[in-house]
Image (cartoon, rainbow, N blue to C red; front, side, top):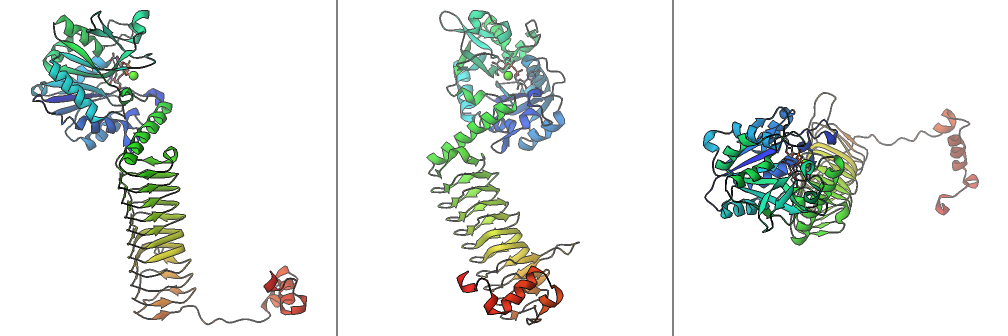
Length: 487
Ligand code: UD1
Ligand code: CA
C-alpha cells in the first residue's frame, strides 16, 4: 500500500460449504483455472500484506496445504466449531504473533472469486485516510435478503450493522448491505474481540457487532461503497458457482477483447485467468484456453479446441484440437481432429494433421505429419514428411523407446517404425514398410517383399461366396455388372 501502515489480512474459510454437496471443500472449487480462495489470495497479495491468516475448519487437511502452496508464509488458524465470524476472527487473532497485531487488519471471505486487488486497496486506503476504528465495504443491492444491513442515523452517519435474523421490518428494507469485508484498526480490534457476545437470533459471535462497539468507544466508523458488488459475492451452491464462473469468464474475455483479441463467440469461449493472448489473436467459437496457455500474435484458434498449458506461436492455425503441455511453432498448422499430448513440440511452419496423435515428440521446422498417425517418443527433423497412416511403435510392452528421423526424409504411407530406430537425413521408405533397422542417410528402405499375385485364390478357397461370384464375373469383361469407368 502507498500508506505507512502495515496490513494484516484475515481470510475466513471455515464454513463447511454443505450446500455444495461435495467431497471438495467449497473454497477449493475452481473458477477460471484457480480455486475460489486462490482468487481471494491473489487479490489480497496486491496489498502486499505483512501477514495473512486463513481460518480453516474441519477440512483443514484439504485447504491448509492449498493455501500454503500459494502463500508459503500464510498462518493457518483452525476453528473447530463455526461459532460465527466474530469467533473466527478471534481464533485468527490468537494465532498471530503478538508483534503482528498492529496496523490495519482486513477481514475477507475465502469464497468471493470475483474480488480484485484494486478494490481491496482502495478500501484499505480509504479506511486509513479516514482514521476509522472500523470501516465496512458496503454495497447497494436490489435484493438485500440474507445480508447484514448497514444502519445510518438521520445525518447519514453509520451506526451499525444488523443481521437479517435480528432486523426489524424497517431495517430489513435497507438495501445497503455489508459485503462482509471489513477493515479495522488493530488496537481497536484487539479490544473489541473479547467484548463480542452471542446474544442474538443465531446464537453466534457476530464480527459486525464491532461497529457498534467502536461507536461506543468514540471511534470513527464508516462505510466505503463498492460499485461492483459482484466482486464480494460468494458461491454457496453449484448453481451460484456456475453463475460466478460465467461472470468471471465474461470479465476475462472483455479484458482480452479490449486488449485487441478477436473473440467471435464469448458465450462458447472459456479462458482461464493465467492465459496470455497477444494482439490480433482470433478465437473462433467453442474454444477453451486453460492453465498457462499463451497464444502469440495473429494466431487463429478454433473452432472447437481445448488447449491446456499450450504455447501457440505467431500466426499458427489450430483447428478442432485437444492439446496439453505442447508447443506449436510460429506459422504451424494443427488439426482438425488432432490430439497433442504432453511433450509435443511442433516447429515453425510444421503440420500435425487430421486424426494424428502425438506425445513426447519433437517435430522440426517445416516437418509434416499430415494424416492418421501416432507419433510417440520421436524426433522428426526439419522438412521431413511422414506418410499417411504411420505408427511410431514406441512401446514393446515393457519399455518405451525413441524413433529418430533425420532432415528432409520422405517416409511413405502406412509405415511402422519399431523403436528404437534411426532413419537418416534425406532418406525414404516404401509404402507399408515395417522399419526395424536403422536407415542410412539417403537410402530407400523397403521392408515389404515384392508383390506376388496368387491367381485364382478366391475361387479355390472361397467357392460359393459373393467374393467368388465377383471374382469370376470380374475375370470375364462381358459379365461385369458395372464397368469401373462408369461407376
Ligand atoms: C456475513 C455477515 C453479514 C454479511 C454477509 C455477507 C456477520 C455476522 N454477518 O453473514 O453482515 O452481509 O456475511 O456475505 O459477519 N465463517 C467462518 N467461521 C464461522 C462463521 C463463518 O469461517 O464461524 C466464514 C464462512 O466460511 C464465510 C464467511 O465467514 O466465508 C461468512 O460466513 P456466513 O455464515 O456466510 O455469514 P453470513 O451469515 O452470510
Ligand atoms: Ca454468506
